[in-house]
Image 1 (cartoon, rainbow, N blue to C red):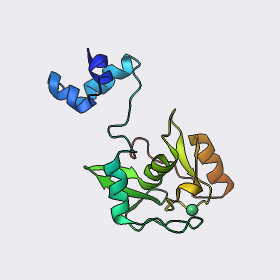
Image 2: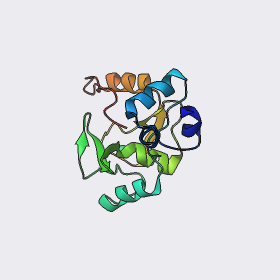
Image 3: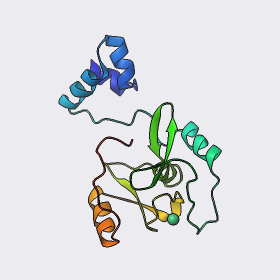
Length: 149
Ligand SMILES: [Zn+2]
């Protein structure tokens, strides 16, 4: 039932409301059913990229586009949209280069965390990111899990 509703495109929040249970219950049940979670909002959602472009304009093609707004953790640009935080470089990557699937992260070739120029981003694993960071002697503190969407 839950899996079917989820497959129909209802969000976990909507299913929780419909069934009168807490969202965490839905989340747990879906995990137990091995249903792959999808982001609450697709990062390629036009309103999300529009919110980014309302705060900053793309720079020249080869320059780093430094996010002028809020920063988070390692210095990544963050935008709050509908009460949730999103990393700007990830929105940018997905908007210009296509969706990040299979748990891949948008990583910086330029080693400049607030940069959101999609040409400076590539898709890689969390391990790639940690390795690059250590290679480049970036501050290796551990990002708290689940904090960023
Ligand atoms: Zn850059």
